[in-house]
Image (tube, rainbow, N blue to C red; front, side):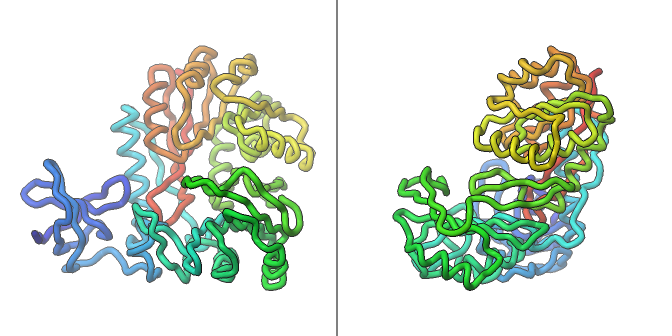
Length: 416
């Protein structure tokens, strides 16, 4: 069945919303102000999904990527970039009000000057000579020959490896402020070591080649065994003036220019002079080490033992001695260091903070909390948990992932 409708809003994941006699229809690849003829593809009791058959009035744009409509890597490249930022700001505001049950100052999302080729970590599935990105909602590989969000040389390396070996995935990481690249060849059985030489000869900026063995029939990308074929399992990158040692398993933000914006927003959210800070879910220490330049002392807590070891090396390499890293769950370890702490900064995974961790903030009357979030829904849930005890001064969205519906936020919470 076909209808003509105007797009008046968006879903959380960037689908356009139009209505026919008050009945909502969610439309792929349609933007605010578009008037479209659509065909319903799926109908439910309270809503329907549709695809565009014809643009009658078009405010959205034609994406620069020819694979956009098949590939699942981006979702909103059909929106002009300023409209992407407006959509994300409104999404944060609506989610905080609906789930968090608070009204606060949600500032305009901070975007990128050049929102392309920003990803410093590429993971590409292979199937014979087929290499690309999974089609949205499937495990079918779209044979992508160009990409506008990956680092350009990383993408070229992945393309070079087509048909070179029986690979499951290729992972390429690149440093933002140097030319260093790390290549991880993920296969069920060991690859020929000569492949590392081919890669380095073709791409001299590659400083490390690793073969990771994953023979399990799961969706997990990396297996438990790895062998270094060239160089070392490490490279260095710079973030806010600090040098970081990164291996092929390290968590590291994928958009360094915007990470610096994000961290600066977190640092300036509170007066750190003579303050003791807990950095929960600290990873390899990048936030805590940035805070340590202004704070009196910082405790970093991280469950991953390898990340804690690297965080300690990063502190040593940067000559930062007013920080201590503790291995364990933030929910369990925070009680051992909480006494005398003035500020807690938390950057949890997408699932948000545990209730035990949030309760420790309440029980210990922590004065200021800086919550860095990659999932506004769990941020809102945790704000709702804390709202009887903490006032949300403001939330600053930062666009770390242009052309996708994802958004990072810095929220400042102050004890009532």
